[in-house]
Amino acid sequence: MTIYNIYIFDRMGTILYQTNWNRLKQSGMSSEEEAKLMYGMLFSIKSFVSKISPLDPKRGFLCYKTSKYALHYYESLTGVKFILNTDITIKNVRDLLHQLYKEIYVEYVVKNTECEMGQPIESELFKLKLDQFIKQHMKSLQ
Amino acid sequence: MGIYGVYIVSKSGGLIFNYDYTVPKIETEQTFSYPLDLKLSCENNRLLVSFGQRDNIKVGHVLLAINGVPVSGRKLEDGKDAIEMLDDVTNYPLNLKFGRPKMTINEKIFLASMFYPLFAIASQLSPEPRSSGIETLEADTFKLQCFQTLTGVKFMVIADPTHVGLEQLLKKIYEIYADFALKNPFYSLEMPIRCELFDTNLQALLEQADKNGINSI
Image (cartoon, chains in turn green, yellow):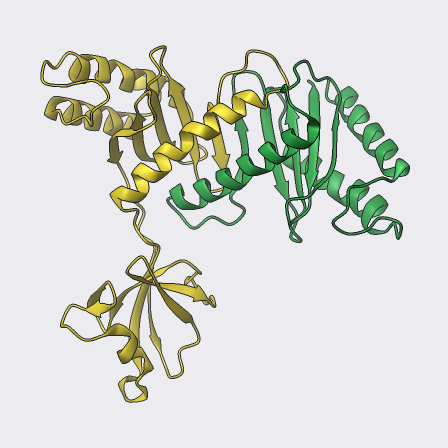
């Protein structure tokens, strides 16, 4: 099982953080451009899902899979969006993302007075903890 | 288990076929007293709930009937204006029926062509080389399975999230498409599919898949 990369957006669509682990292909554009394209796609998918859904959606879009990777989406009640790209075998990513939100984002970003709302995350501690968290899960799920 | 509908999108991204197999009805009928605790607004010639939720009435639902008389657009079937009726205190208590709006054919065409760029961007943003576009899209209320043929035609089925074996179902739909649409001399490529045999065979396939599970076909 592999985790490729993560994107974190705030509720206005600003990219807060993005990083890669075992990424094999770059998208051929700057990371800034890529984040914009990703947010745009998610925005469209969300609107697509809410319209095409036969029943009233509650959480809406959860994930999609292609032949090579799976994209998992988690949105907190405050509108912070976590996007995790993994390989297609992995399960229960929703729980993992919820845990990541609770244990890493809330602990090291929300409670960090140096981190401003709506600004890219610069905290080294957050980067370190996130890296540890993902690597630990990659190992434990293997 | 449950299949909601099938969409076929041509290689240039236009909707060429749509079939709604089961459309769940979400309707709530309730008696309201003055003043109305929901805010309604008129959009696309329909009265939508724009603010306020109660019981099973959600934002985005449309007003379907007042005192059992169906509402079409802003007017009731007997010619009265719906908004005027709701504003008049003397009419209350009123029995109002709200429901999730059904998709119009225009909205379906719009959504089907919207899937095309999403499919392409998903493949472009892939962290692995040579990835396809979206194959399965999951939400809490449904699952969308997409199958793209070598010629670029996309088959999509929308089903309950617990439904399994949608890939085989799509392959079968492709067979029916090849047999009854492509081999029909009156059918021209990229045009909407209007073939009776295709419709009946597709319907039979969906009924069988829904009743006996996917392995029976």
